[in-house]
Structures are given as structure tokens and as C-alpha cells.
Length: 348
Image (tube, rainbow, N blue to C red; front, side, top):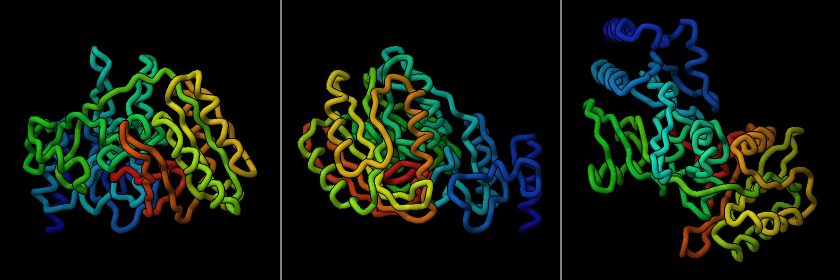
């Protein structure tokens, strides 16, 4: 069987020249480089797909060879599930984003990252619901839930998913939404995965001319008081305010509390709404400011990425959907803080 698999992979490589990375070949290390440290056996092959037909071919090869199959979007999953011991479908080359004429929704390809989406939506002063880190893949983020700085006003990324284009295990391509393939659409929204390969999504967009946000760092010794004050502020604030925080390691290795408030309501109220977060305790670092362009978010993300933690962290986010009571979303999973999601990570 190993010889048969090797032969099948070589035939596969001949069908997609220069698009398959095999162990020992140039480019394999880059093809398998992901944010988390890989664990377990490495892939037999990484297929860099650019079309739906190539995704179908990769699925058929994995099925014929009885090999595990995984999908890599942004490669930021904390559990390294973007890789497997069989065939990895790399969708990073399928990263197109297009906004519909009415600017109420966007078609996002399966390999697009949050930065790819922002680059298209920002000039139009609209926004998709993304996470906090610009390098995270939108498909994995969405299918995993999708906590982020707009959760209070706009909900999860998953709440804004309108339709999904999926390649199934038998190679069929279907479009799932509330009216077509409704059970599959429901399963994709929180069912745990393994239903197919998402090659495109349609996401709802929101009017968002600007936000007030930033990162604030407080001593770990004051963590309890800081978090309690965050909760008190959030409980009495409108849905336009979202507060994320986490216990992480600072660049010098010391534990600290990181608070990330985001106001996405009326710009004139922004400074007033986020100002109380500057007085939660002994402020060690950070600032809050108005942001009107995606490049401002990029600068913030780069600064936040300095606060890395090789161990485990516990994180929470506060938010509510319109008309709902405030609820605490308490994530007890573990991941490294450098991804700055502060809530469940993308599954692929």
C-alpha cells in the first residue's frame, strides 16, 4: 500500500506541476509552517489549490488512497489541525474578496485572511465581522464561531454567514444557505467540522466608518480588580462596546492583564466610551485611539503581537446581541496569546 500511495501522489503531482509540496522537496518546510508548533506525523503532501476543480482532485486522491485530509486556511489553529498525516489542501491561493453592488455582503474565498477582507471593505467604509488578528483565515474563524472586537454590535462571525460554497467528500459542489442544503448549512455553523471543504462564503457587511480601540496592559497582581471593573463597565454600556481581555506574558516574560476595548458606535462618543478603561488600575502600557482605516488596525495588531505567551492562558470577552442581555463568553480552552483572538480560535 505505501508504494501505491507514493505512485498515486506522483501521478497527482504530474497533474498539478509545481503545485504540490512533498517531504524532502524545496518548499515543503514553508508549506507546512503554521502558527502553532506541529504535533504528530507530518503531511504526505500539501496541495496548493487555486480552483474548485483542484480541490475536488485533492479530495478524490485522498479518498482513493485512504489518507487523512485536512484544510489549511490561515494556519492559525491553536491545535495545529491545519496539518494531518495525509493530504493537506492549502487554500491560501484562493484568497479573493468581492463586495456586492449594494455593499451589504461580500463573497470571501476559502483562503482569504482578515487582512484580505479589510483591504477591500475598508475603502467602502463597511466591515465584515473578523477576529482580532489580521492573519487569521476567515473560513476557519467563521466555522469555529468567530469572536472579535465587533461582537457586541454585530455578533459572531458565524452569525453573519449568509451562504457557503462547499466541496463534499464525494466531490460534489453545493451552495448551502437557509433555503438550500439547510441541514448542511446548520451543521457548518457549529457542528464541529468534517462536512466538506469551504471554498467560498457570503458574509454580511456592516456600516463602520470608524472605531475607537486599543490595547491596555495592567499588572497581573491587579487582575481580579481589573476584570471586575471591565465587567461593570460592559454591563452598563450599549451594544456598540465590546471588551476583550486575557492574561498573557509580556515581552519580558512577566504575566500581565491585557484589555482591548472597542467602540464601534457614533464616532463622537468613542473617546468618552473607552476612557474609563484607562483607569482600571496601574496602567503599564498601551493607549486608545480612533481608527478609521484598516492600516490603523494593522499597527495595533503588530503591537499586540509583542505580548506572547508560550504557555496557556484563560480569556474572556463581553458582548451582547441587539435586544439581548449582556452575557459573559468564558473560553476555557488554551492557546498562545500571540494570536490575540482572546476567544476560541479558528479550527483550520
